[in-house]
Amino acid sequence: MSELIERDVEYTAGGVAMTGYFCVPETAGRLPGVVLLHDAFGLDQAFRATARRHAHSGRAVFAADLWGGRRSPSTGDEIGQLIGSMVSDRDTWMARVHAAHEAASGQPELDWDAVATVGYCFGGSSALEYLRTGGRTRGVASIHAGLDLLIPGWESSDRDARVLVCTGADDPMATPAQWQALKAALTGRGIHWELDLYSGAKHAFTDPRADSLGMPGAAYDARAAARALGSTDRFLDELLAQ
Image (tube, rainbow, N blue to C red; front, top):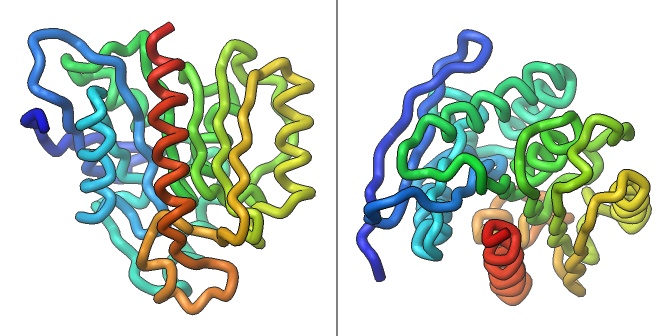
């Protein structure tokens, strides 16, 4: 396994101080990259490990700090309040995602012409919403996103982007009606999409901590997690090689 260059990156959005995390394999040149958007638990140690796993696949990875101050909520109530604050103020929400992409663009090891956006859970919703509202990204991989957080209107999205959605068949935050609506919106815009649907999988299926939230619709599923990681690696390999 290759050695990684790692560093924290300070940036701001709307006057809020944020500390992102950048990691990249040691290389003499620039690499295709990923802006990685964290789940509800924030940019904590576990999610920085996720960033390193993506980097070991040969990509430059900028992991955003969407909550600010490296905040890492630990209860369902705290998580609900943070997500609610973003959904009720979508301009602030998208400003934070945009700021992360801007901070990523300043990393000299990252090839800004070959960047995708990858999000888990709330980050998956954030990645899709960023694309929907005209964000600059070659494509989005969205893993167990809360599709219930999305709203209609894809007129500003980049038609040339590609989308991978990995979701659980038993996720109450990504119901068949919701992913069918997303598919219809992407198709209507002319965006190429893929949908991986995992039987028996619930919300937050990649995170072992999901079982501690006390949410009936959230649970860790190792099989679905492995399949989503494999699909995401393949999707990014194809997307960023173009």
